[in-house]
Image 1 (cartoon, rainbow, N blue to C red):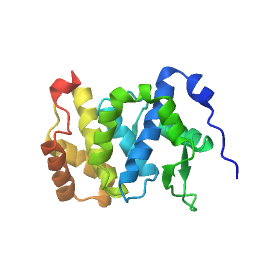
Image 2: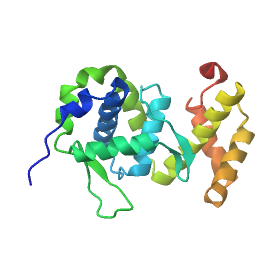
Image 3: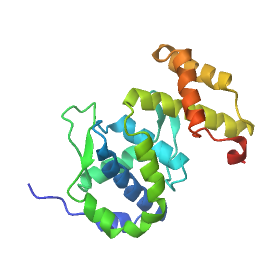
Image 4: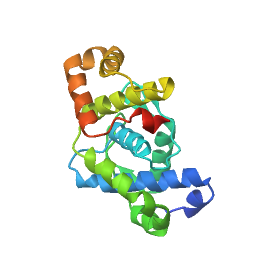
Length: 201
């Protein structure tokens, strides 16, 4: 089967922010292969969420969804990367995904490395930090971060642990108990992954 040609015009003709999104998402997928965990839709969504939170210039808008923060733009970028054989989906189940580098991934990264270099360390750190988490663990971690950050941005002051735990528990109901939510909150806090009031101002 002939490999689809990499349509560099797809990158070149789009606004800069969208072109950068193609490149950074492709790089995250390549880097994530260091883990033996399956890279599916949930994991990729959360990696993009945390990459953006870490300062990578991704033009994605996230909203809280069934499995945590979700962005329609991430989904659309991923589908375009599959069409161009930059990435592939190895899953035979239409309800699940198993992303892997495609035949054109290295071509894209080599041609546009200049657009990646200054953000590479942020992406590496996110992929490494979360590389061993399962989709369910990523769901909880990202939901805690999203609720904490949203409250901080809205109220201009750091929310209490109790308020974050209560809100996450209310959203997730029986999926996670309060003890586990509080424990994961503490891990994020100790790792410096929950932004402070100064970071939101």
